[in-house]
Image (cartoon, rainbow, N blue to C red):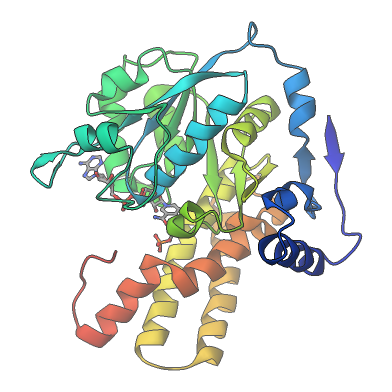
Length: 342
Ligand SMILES: NC(=O)C1=CN([C@@H]2O[C@H](COP(=O)(O)OP(=O)(O)OC[C@H]3O[C@@H](n4cnc5c(N)ncnc54)[C@H](O)[C@@H]3O)[C@@H](O)[C@H]2O)C=CC1
Ligand SMILES: O=C(CO)COP(=O)(O)O
């Protein structure tokens, strides 16, 4: 069921060759399915998982809590994947924090146009994804809860969910950040798990939403508590252009995704001050080491390998070059203001 993949040839060379062949010489988009995995962690072969699960044994109903920029890209991925695999019920309910756009409810616009005109204009959301402004309706009967909202809204949203969810539901958090209150800071997965008394996995990686909407190749990492959940979530999220690695380290995966934002803000200051690429590389290197030290000091069980997955070093690089956290810091230096970054 599980295979250990190792470096045999340079993955970068293999990737470049296959990607260029497929995109520019017409070999088809299947190239990604033929890409060699070059993970040193355990990867699970999808076909082998599916042979162990039947429609009778599992029909997972997926609720997506969030519909911002990343949430909408995720709706496209999971909307398509639930149609591909028999383990899933074929409709995905998506919670939209209602707002008025172009004089109309965003929920109505999404259901009518199959597009999130505010947070991801220009991309089609599959028709089996249905938008709702009523959170209770979205989670009713759901067995899989996908949290994809900004971190500051997690506590209130969980409060609204109490007593409304299936007690056997499992969740995955795509949220990058911490929950903070007077008692201190907590990983979001812990905040959700403690509030709702359910198992919570995490998904994080070098995942700039707009690039994934364009179906450009990228990777992500899922941290799981139980292997079966990691396997199920891999199936829900993996596509040819969005490759999923799984590792038994929920907090490690998620904390990399929260702390890399601090490094990205440092990188943005460097850019704003025009200190150059050497200084930026130094900020990335030192920041990465500090992130690792912080996590290992305050949380037990974090694996060294996690830092070298997509959620670790790759996300630090992606955010320090392309993320909104970098942009907001650069803009603060150059304009003296903190604005909203698109
Ligand atoms: N955008 C990206 O490239 C990526 C974002 N993430 C993470 O995903 C999470 C969600 O981010 P995005 O989808 O990008 O959101 P976003 O920043 O694009 O949009 C904000 C969302 O928050 C909602 N909102 C506003 N007020 C609210 C309230 N009171 N309660 C609940 N929701 C409210 C808005 O309706 C909107 O859906 C964040 O933790 C972010 O760090 C992770 C990877 C990539
Ligand atoms: O997490 C991200 C990329 O992996 C997105 O980062 P920003 O929130 O800084 O845009």
